[in-house]
Length: 330
Image 1 (cartoon, rainbow, N blue to C red):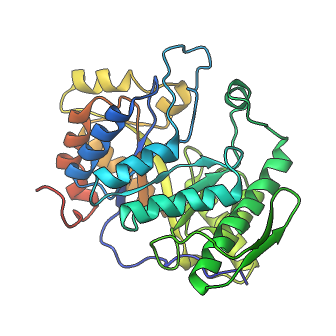
Image 2 (image 1 turned 90 degrees about the horizontal axis):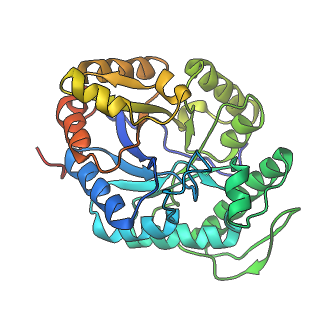
C-alpha cells in the first residue's frame, strides 16, 4: 500500500476543471503576473498556475525577466480570493525538502487553503548553471524527487498528527523535527506529479500524487493507463487520483486574432500540440483530452499581457466544458 491514500478521486464535479498555466515568453514582473491571475479568477477558471523557471526556453533571450515561483504565489495568495494556486511543475533541485514543505505550507495558510504542489525532477541544465544550482544526473534527480516528496509529505503528516518527523536518506536528512510546518488544508495540499516517462514517473506518482499530469503530446490515454498499472502494483485504487493534461492555446474571435495569438507560441513542438483556432476548436480539443481520460486541463498561456485572451476563453469556452465556480463573474 502507499504511505498515504492520496487524493479524493473524482468528486462528481460536472465538466472538466479548467486552469490557466502561465509560461511567460520573456519573463514577467509581479504586477503582470497579478493582472493575469486576477483575469483568470474573473473569467471563471478553477486555478492559476505558473511555471517554476528562472530562464526562458531560449537561453540567449536577454529580455527574459526571472521571478521566483513561490514568492509570487505568496503574493497572489493575498491578492486573489477564489482561484487555486500552484506550480506546474516545481523543480526538486531548486529547494531543500524541509524548506519547500515550509514555504508551501506558508503560502497555503496565506491563501486560506488554496495551494497545490506540483513537483518534478528539474530538466533545464543551462538554467541551473546560470543560477549556480547543482544539476545531478537524471537517475540522481529522480532519487532526489522521490525523497523530497517523502520528506515534504512526511513533515505535513507529522504536523497533522502532532508527531515529530525524521528522515535519513541519501539526499535529505531530517533530524527529529518536533515543529513541522502546518498547511491550512486537511490533510495537506494536493500533490501533482507528471511527465512522459514510462517507469519512474508513474511509479513515484502512484505513491505520492493526488493528480497525475500526462503532460503534452503523445498518447495521453496510454500514459494514464501506465499510471493506473503503477497504482495497482502497489495496491492503490487508480480512481483516487485525478488526471490532467496541458494544452497550449491560441484562441481568437476571428482569423487575424487567431494568427496573432498563435504566433506567440514559442516552439514548433508547442505549436504542433496546441489548440490554435476559434472557441469552438479549442472546446473540441479540450473534449478530446477529456475523452482520453483528463478531468483537468491546464491552458498554457504565453502572452501574459493579453488579458482579452483569457476573457474570451472564459466567455466562449468555459461554459461548454466546465461548471463556472462559485464567485466567478457571470
